[in-house]
Image (cartoon, rainbow, N blue to C red; front, side, top):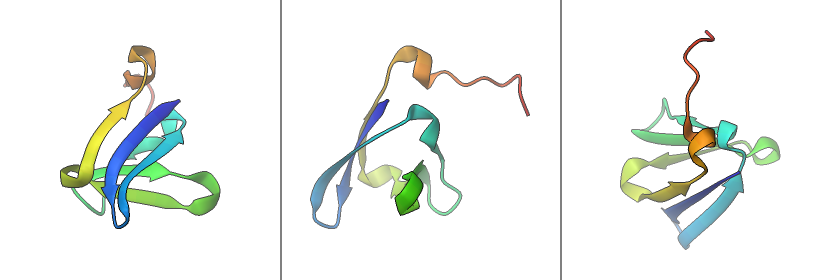
Length: 65
């Protein structure tokens, strides 16, 4: 699990999601969070406070296409 904390329209927001649900965003210079049933959340880097996850969750496996 990963905890994403960011500045939203209503103040500071938090989302707890699977670490695999976080990727680079193609729409903004920031991240994209897949919220499953709710769709995607695009957060610009300038509005992102932090992403907290374990070291193993933060590693990327480049061996697969």
